[in-house]
Structures are given as structure tokens and as C-alpha cells.
Length: 222
Image (cartoon, rainbow, N blue to C red):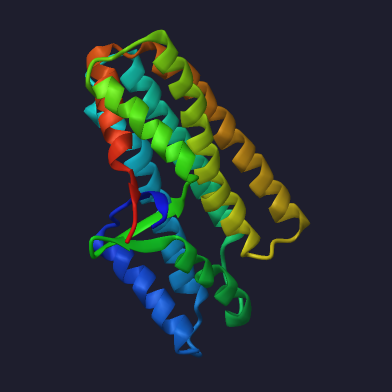
């Protein structure tokens, strides 16, 4: 089995992913960049929604809730701008490389279609242990310090997969690679800053919500 950070996509996103993979396998003459771009933009929005926006909705009104909402909005805007710069009309030979990336970003869990990326087993094991302690009201400063460090590692692995590795499949030129690097750096800094600010300040109820949400996104696939 393999450990993942992942989520169940919407019916529209799943259908688009399956269509892209099917067309690529059939060696179609239809322009593939159109479905590739639909999938990329949809996946980006749903990933941000599940990882950040949904958590913000769950938190009770506070400055922490506002922090998560602002972070979600910033990253969504940053990634939409980046993708619009990177994506566009290309011949099928080039697009096939980025569509094949979808096979590394999809899997099943108990027969359910999932989108996600692999995470180091030891990181997931330790995070789940901390999440369990948080949900059992075993809250200490040591737990929070370790949680900050491990949440940053989790974010870094997701960013590497969904930004760095995906963009590598696009065969970008110098200027587009530079745009990708800037966006990745801005996203990483924003998430790390939010983790440092958010985790120490969560009260017991908020920490339990935080732990339960992220715990549900870490699992072993079939």
C-alpha cells in the first residue's frame, strides 16, 4: 500500500480526468490541450478548496478563520494566474507529457476515485499520531511545535508534486520556468507563515477541527 494526501474530486473533475486519459490512450487527433487545461484549472481549484477553504469554513468566527480565508484566496489567485501563463495551445505530442502526469495524481481507495499525491510513510504515521492526540484533548506545546514542523513538510511535498513536478511535465521555457519558481516560492512562504501563525493560536476546539480535517486527507490507497 501507498500513503497519500488526497481527496474525492467532483463528478465534473473526475469525468474530465477520465476523458483526458482516455483520449491520450486512444492517440486521438483532437487537440488535447483543451481538456488538459480544463483538468489543470479544475484540479487546482478543488485542491485549494479541500486543503484550505473547507477548513476555513469549519472554524468558528475569529482572526484565525480570517487568516485561513485570506490564505486560500491568495493561493487560489496566485495559482490561477500562474496556470493561465503556463497553459494554452500546444500540439498533442507535448500535451501528452502533462496528461500522463495525471496517472501519478489519481488512484482509488476502497473503490472510490481519488486525486492526490504520495506522502512519505513516516510523515503520515507521525502526523496521524499527533492528530489523534489533538482529537483526544492531549494538547501540549510539544505537540504543537512538532505539528508545525510536520505540517510544513506535508505542504512542501504537496507543492512539489502539484506545482514543481506538474510544471516539469510541461517542458517550459526559461521565462515560464521563472514564473513557476516565483509562484511556488510565494505559495510556500504563505503556507509556512500561516502554519506558524495559526497552529500555536488554535484553542482546543479549533485544534480538534484542524486535526480532524487534515487527518481525513491522509490515508493508504488500495
